[in-house]
Image (cartoon, rainbow, N blue to C red; front, side, top):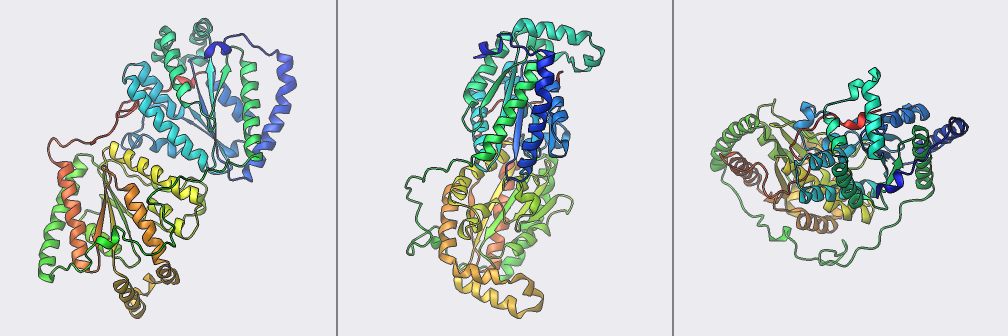
Length: 522
């Protein structure tokens, strides 16, 4: 694979000067055009040691307008990164639409280093590369352009370059002890790199192999390749996705009435007032103790509340928050996305709120809006909300793999009960803020929402993140069911010898500290 990067290509100083200014002008122009689009550009910079990755990135910062360009290096994990799922640090680096982000190593850094160092096997590497493929597919389907550069040198040229760097006082800070390991085992590193590139070289996010022996040739090649990639992406819209194959769940929203999971709920269930009060006090005391226990064990708790309008989400959430120390939780009410949130993938605004280990986060509505309101109201295209099921499942799997205790509640009420609550809100001054014209419009689309909820539960109720359907006509019954479910899950997750992660696949890079990226070389 790497033979083509060892042929000795070179550019003279004169040729470089002749091409540099014109290339820079063209890059600035295409960057200006990019700002007017909805395309975020992600540039991955990776390769062998001493290939000059740092020099290339500095050159890009020289040639491009840095007001629309950010650079991220993934060195030692910070405390806040260590206490969150690994991809959290990458989501924070994703550029808004119309801008460019350059990532040193990106999500490839940990897998290749860990496999090279023997911290994982080929199966674990393949599992992580499969996740990377899914991640990049998700970003490109959302409109992103991913340009991946791999810089390569022959073993002889690498040794010479490393020797020169070790003699340069300006470069000694880059010469970490770990770098010698890569040069000493060049063949092994090249073998691991080839496996990684072959498995993740796809049309949606191809690798560009760049010969790095001559710095002038290297820099011009990167600039021209990036220029062409952005130009092509601006001219050509994303290819349309083929229509999905037939599926038993794929019934049109306007289909005749059908039996769904929600129809099987017994909404007549009630709880006596006295029993409710005693159970509420008992369960809230338990939750208070359990959340402190989770804090001490550094176990994050993620609660997701979805349900019909006036389904009782707010009341259930308040019964939880009144039992938890305010320093331990944060409640996130999810409304229409802001301009900043619209400039990113729809999951970005949820990744950014993931708390540090030991905390609790409560989402009052969540990422499921993609397959509910955005689907029914046609804010998302059919292809967008259809692919969201797998995107959401992977997001939740990453939370659980990192040790989060994840609970998802759907609160269901009958049409009659919902209507009664709407009228009560209209007639009660301090409740009137809760009722809007949109609530009444949603009632007219009840069959469509019912079909969407049924498919949502069927496709996203997984072993690691099951849905709890709550019968909500009787508020005391619903609240106690939510609280008792939360207590049971916390008890099971926090008991002695309970596995932190159940049924997850080990991947290269999981829960292992890495050193500063050698890719920050000159």
